[in-house]
Length: 136
Image (tube, rainbow, N blue to C red; front, side, top):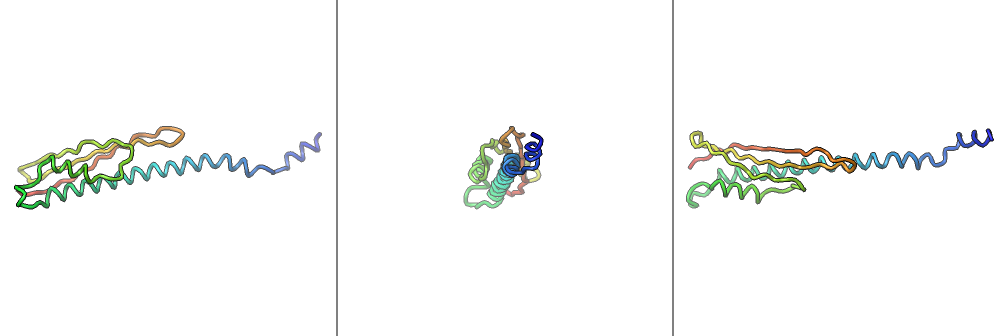
C-alpha cells in the first residue's frame, strides 16, 4: 500500500490540465476587464469628438445664415456627431451662454456601466466641457 501511495505522490500526469483549469478563468476575466476599460476609452474619444465638432460648429458659422447657431442647433450637432458609446447613458448636452464675455460653455455627460463577468463593476460617469468664444 505504501508503495502505491509513494507512486501516486511522485506521479505528475494531469498537472498541466489542473493548472490550465485554474489559469483560464483568471485570464478570461482579465481580458474581459481590459475590454471594458477599452470601451470607456472609446466612449471618452467619442465624447471629445462630438464636443469638438459642436465647438467648431458654434464658432465657424456663415453670416448668410442669419447669425450664429442656436443652442438647440448646437445640441443637435453634438448628438449627431457622437460615436463609440456602448450601452451607457448619454446625457442631454447643456450650453451656458455668457453674453458679457462672449462665450458659451458646452458640457456633455456620459455614464458607462462596467461588467467584469463574475461581478458588476462600477458605473463610470464622464463629464467634458469646452468654452467656445464667439462673436455675433
